[in-house]
Every structure is written in C-alpha cells, then in structure tokens.
Length: 107
Image (cartoon, rainbow, N blue to C red; front, top):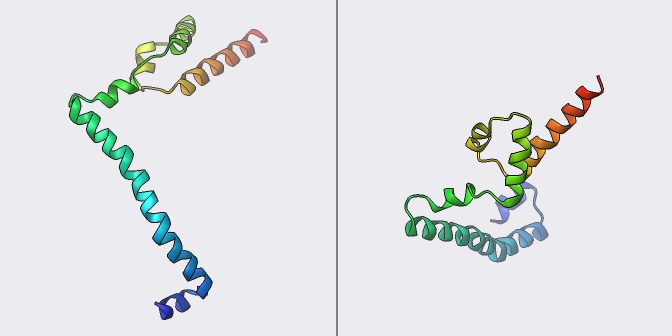
C-alpha cells in the first residue's frame, strides 16, 4: 500500500485521512443511500401500481392557482401536466409568460 500511495504522490498524512474517510464515511454514505432505496422498495411493494408516480402527480392548491393562470394564457395544460413539472417549473413558466406579455404590451 505504501508503494502505491507513494507512486500516486500521496503522503502518509493523505493516506491516513483517506483511510479515516473509508472507515467512517463510507458506511454512513451507504446507509444514506440504502435507507431511501429501501423505503421506495417498501412503498412500491405495498402498491405495485407505482405509488411513487402518484406522489409525483399530486397537485397542490398553489399549483391549481398557477394552472388557472396558465389557462388564461391559452396554455395547453394537458401538455404541461404530461411532463410532470415541479412547482418551481410551473411557476417559472408562468413568470416567463408574464414577462413576455409585459414586453409585448410595451411594443
């Protein structure tokens, strides 16, 4: 190991630091990865139709307001919903349309 570290240009201090990360950090990262993965597996096993997809399509009250505003701009809501956008993406689209409308009014 010493020869490999020396060939890679690592000092003894670097190697000790890397070993500490490997001993302490990797199990924690593995736990942080496996916990959500096991929760998703449990949810999908409970509802094989794809409960996760249902969470993605939940429309909040705020989103309903944004969708109604988008409808005023003659936006095809079915196309927008087909992309399953996040709340931030929906509001961003609305803001861009408002900006375009303001620019066109000024012309």
